[in-house]
Image (cartoon, rainbow, N blue to C red; front, top):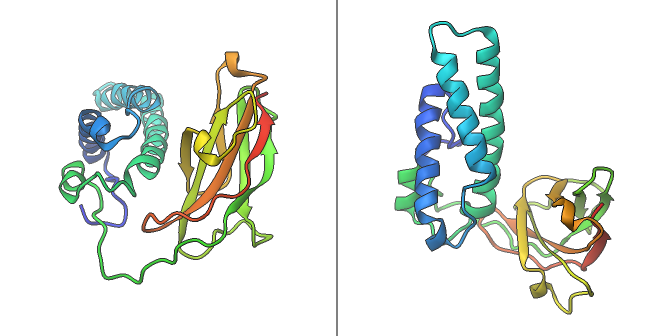
Length: 220
């Protein structure tokens, strides 16, 4: 597939594509050094598969079709987040892998995106929902939320620590999002712990800019 969007639109094509995508990533995630597609991905996939089969039944109703559409939308959201965070800029994923997964293969010949020279900073940290920390970010050189030219998204490194980290490498967890805000979700047992986090931009070809300052907050 060499289209702008790698996710097929017709339900039947999407059903086949997403099952293949899941199976292929499950077989290769360790070699690619990325998180397993289990957990949230697998849960949303099972929900969609069940709803899709019910929506195809001869005695289906409007509620069955609505549930199929809702579970598909939730699954697409999870797939895009997994792809952006783990596959898009992963040099270990070959063009052959992308072809087998039905993904867009990057083309050469475009004007290279500039390596980010600035960094994102936390504009606001929302602690209004229990067990969630929502970080709103923007470029440190701008008063607006627009990303710098050539930037694809923001890489967030974080960790729950008893003491301030001596350097960014101590923040062993990482996530990626293309738009502000990003939400980190925690367990009940992690409430009250201190969260340290640091942000940097990643451009459209995978080049990473400098980290900003290390910030902290408390998991609500």
